[in-house]
Image (tube, rainbow, N blue to C red; front, side, top):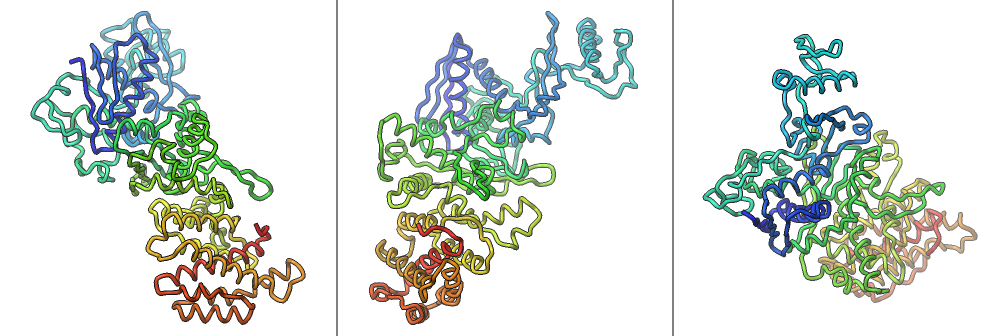
Length: 614
């Protein structure tokens, strides 16, 4: 057997595993240039050829395992107290305890799961003592010099002897290399030979299968990932399926939030393996040594694009990941990162200065393939993490185009950083909560809802209306609803709603603009009522317009809306264009009312929050 094919399937873990295997073969070949190896990735399969192919697959697997499964925290590295021993010539090495983070942690059940599974099985020290006393003595000497104990033995006057009273210490000895957290695999030829045993994952038949246990994350919790497995971990699958599934954690884009209490992970998905490979630039991922050095080791593995803005007292905010509390926010940040990285690279490579949103997908070379992002979340439950959220977002291309429209909007650029901050909301009730994590989540509920709507292509008009309305009521009461540029949020709303063609709402762009213009006229008239002499009088006018804005909000029919407009006309001498009144119908009046209210509240909130009239 000198050639093996790994074929694309409908399983996200298998396809991701193929890409991960390909990437590690590239790394393995660079490190071992003399290795006899040929491999080629196609749209539908990966072909590997070697004279000693099983040994090659094994070496590649444990090569990956050292990077992805064998991870140690900063503290574990500092307190390293594990040893492995080589008999001839005698030598030993020291290594730290290990945990597995990210998706690998779900497979190994770290840190609450079984003990690590060394590639070379450990031996009992008691057996070494009887069968190889010289080797045992050398090992015992190392233990003695480092004030460590061996279970069932004591060392006196540099001599070792059995002692049943010694109940503490190590009983297993690791030989030749440190243990590994990567699940142990047996590389046997029969697992690749054709037979009559069918694999439900790869849709192939082999002479023998292996247990699926310890292969896939979430088999019993998120059946959308592994419907073929249902909840039975004892079902048999092919060795190829298990092998690839164990590679998949290396490309799982993950982030822990609330310390390590919540976990969010995502995979790209598309129709071609070669295209899938292109969606995972290596620069996206942090290197292992970087993640080890953090206070919260391995808390995220994606280099999320940082954007900065000033907070109170000129404190700079730059890491959006630390401000995210939901899978929707993390997904959006991944897509923003993808856009920023790929777009910047392509512009520089092709020497292009300007691209519109229609040309963008072609520039990024993602225009001809479907792309989605598979995402799940798990929260702490007792002593483990339990998955409770799964979604496949197919709106990836649209979101990338939307980000580009916002960032490159000539009329008024909408920086994502300002939008990220502007969609948070707070009030005195939220601020009174002592639980920091709970408080942060509540402050971000509007942002989470907005992003969730974006990812699904749903209108956000009602959500933004609510944000502006709640902010106005707090500002009118001298309270603080949080920092935001209302004009940028409004511009974002206009661009987004135009992009989705308003969903089921029948409204042309010109009518949207007129409705917003009507609202701005109302807001301007309220602020400048009776020619205020200073900002304080303008604020007083803005507050006094409250009952009219509430009336506009509460209008439930076209007639009530018209009546409210007439009252505002009489009070503030506002001119309402006939085009607006003539365009009102049962399908669009709610949207027109919402846009008008948002337009008015935009002006009022700007004055009440001491912002410039941009």
